[in-house]
Length: 102
Image 1: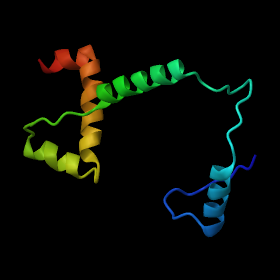
Image 2: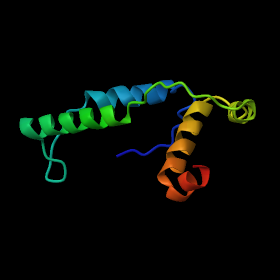
Image 3: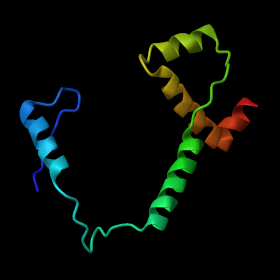
């Protein structure tokens, strides 16, 4: 087994691409630690993955924000809407926060 630290923000080197190609050419050999899954198990994993994907799918909504809130959010940079989503999820999970603003 070969372990390497790879910077995912950079393109892979020729050596890294060669290593990946060689790894993809090797056959998969199940053993007692990682046995081959049955068709039924694979189907079950597939169903679970599909259900989880649907649970995580974000929905588009229209939300009105004050100019200050929008300015602050945009100052967070690219991906600020994802940050707002996480903040909102955390706030809604806290009953005291909800009570405070009702």
